[in-house]
Amino acid sequence: MGETVFRTVHAAAGAFVAAWVIAFGAAGAASATTYAFTGPTYTSIGNAAACTVGPCASYTTAMRVTGFFTTNAPLAANLSAANIYGQITAYSFTDGINTWTKSTGGAGNNRLVYLGVSTDASGNIIAATTNFDAYLWLSADHTTTGRVSFLAGNLNQPRHNLTCGSVGTGADGNTDDCVTPTNDVANGSSASAALGVWTTVPDITSLNPSSGPAAGGTVVQINGFGFTGTTGAAGVMFGAANATSYTVNSNTLITAVAPPGSGSVRVRVVNNSQTSPDTAADDFTYSANPVPTLSEWAMILFGIILAGGAALHIQRRRQAA
Image (cartoon, rainbow, N blue to C red; front, side, top):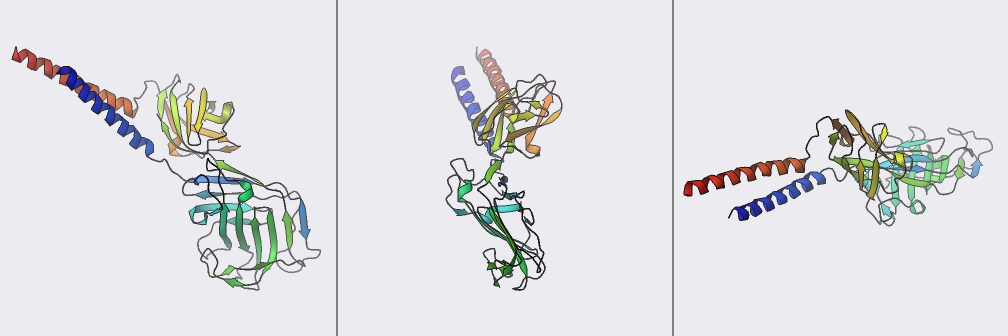
């Protein structure tokens, strides 16, 4: 009977621990994700010979398009020319002359009306399939007499100081969108370049465990996104120290061994020259006395229950005797 009770309670303990770990591990599995873009310098320039209308400026071959956008959750894998406009929570792009940043409704001059992307099996953007459509009112005049700058294609075809052929309701819902930007050869400037590179900024959503002994050696599961391609000794860092070792298990999981340390440190993942942002989820605490993990606390609790049950069983047998 004692063995049966032990097996029953032990099985219940295992199920409880598994459910607890899964519940806590699932928390924060999805989070905001940032995708950064770096274009090559322009190879073709078309500047007005003598601009006299609008904010005159010229592109140069030293300029390029760079920027980023952030979504409320990682992009799904294997997207095909999907319009992700509705998922974007922030963005900022520059073409060397103008800067596009997220604005609220029709209150600003920035308008991102379409962003179509395709992704690979890990959810990373495939540059050649990007379809970008954004423009910038260059003044408070949002009519056909106003001037605009336009950023389109694969983020490699900027246009500055255009006229607006017609104003109406755009794909973003604003009623004062420049629906038809029109080149102004006499006053505008244009440029083009080869395709740029998209990189997913790595993001850490949780550490398991998030603490360990000062001597190091703790095996830490780093959960997040954008980990595929992480390499080099400094790919994973605990504070200023490199991880003793690490394995990129998938795009969403890295298993790392913590180096010796003290106090509370930030864990960082560096991938494609992008560093994971600093959040409360990436804090790792060193302690002189190791702090049990959630699963270890659960096993300790059930160990106490088992010990109590065994003591009660022995007492009853003695009473029966």
